Image (cartoon, rainbow over all chains, first blue to last red; front, side, top):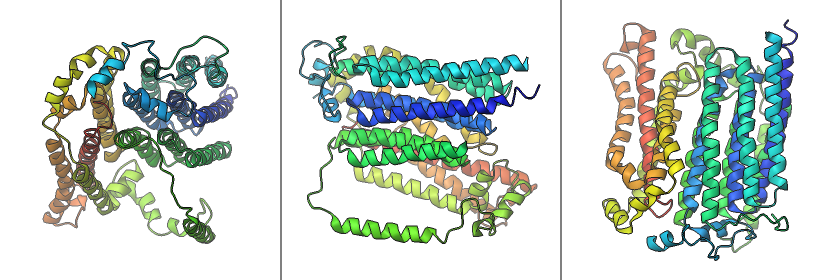
Length: 124
Length: 105
Length: 331
């Protein structure tokens, strides 16, 4: 009866290791970029994985107190993503400056003039 | 009952981990930003959901379960919202959603 | 198992630090420092320093990222390379590092029970805090009761830092925001945009504020306390500002009110100390507040945590307002 419950810690441990691997690859994506949005996405994903890792660690060590921290992280991660997006909004030049390549960021194209062009012009 | 719970949560957690690894492969293999975002956000929500659900099955009816439930609900709403906002901002800043496989990165 | 996790996290930490060093795009550095803070918190958790991890979680990724972004928004997104080759600096850094490494040789091993720190006051804190303070979380009882004086100092430091930032940066055109926004037509224009974000954030803000209050009042029993609660409460306000504009946020609570609240927090803390003096005890000796010492401790910790929480909250929001009333984040 109790033997099957002893299986759980190894499940948690395996899951934590796999999550660490995922975090590593996300970290590489955040370092490589290439566009600014890739980095934002990578950081957001890294945050999610950290929250999951923290929850798993809490269960692994048998102290689910840690969940408060996971909760704060879930919240704060969302905040930083939104802040970055509000920062970029309507400033394509800044996005271009913040990216290490401009392969799929064509700032001067006129494909969607109603997206952000007029508002930026009006603001200045 | 215990056996069932253990098996169910193991299944859920391994599903979550599988989704997570899929996402990690996705953000490397996909050709452009929007495809990568798609890979990342879909698996992100799925991974969080499955993993936390698996943990909830294990924690029984305690304060921990309620907190896990909150984290789960928060993720279910915030993760798609963040992806949506990210895609919208990227589009309005001039990132092109191209479907040609030739386009590198 | 824990060891493997620790080593992996430390490797990631090193990688991130190296990458931060190599990249000259300031935006990437901010993103990577967010990751750095996430990694730090995971490490703290795996080393059982839950309260530290909580603080790192609340400050490192959220507010720090927001403030850094406002900074590069107001200045420049490119790093200027240093013109000279700082050989001397390298030498100094290497020498200091060598001395520090040499210093660690005298330090006891990690977790060594014979280390001096485990023989000085720590045993008293660990053994007696249940009877003397009656708080389940020993960190809280040390922070706010045994070491209440230090925490008062920290609160004053936060208060001073906030005042200095506001004094240095100030508020640009505080009164004119409404007019300027109306003239530019931003308010009407923005209402239609970001419908999804608006609804989601509107839904989240009450929950965030409620959670902050939970952290504030639950500090006796679990990780958390005034500092973390203040930061989380401030995060709720920052969410509001990001979505609905600086003008609207300043109508909720004006910078002037905020500075009063900040002072009030510090005064609450100090006032508790003065009250205990007047009631015949030592400064910040909560035992005399109530006939029952344990109840007195409970009341005293509750009050000073409240003071810390309000100060931290108002200073964080004040600094954020000061930063984003420059041209940093879009309002």
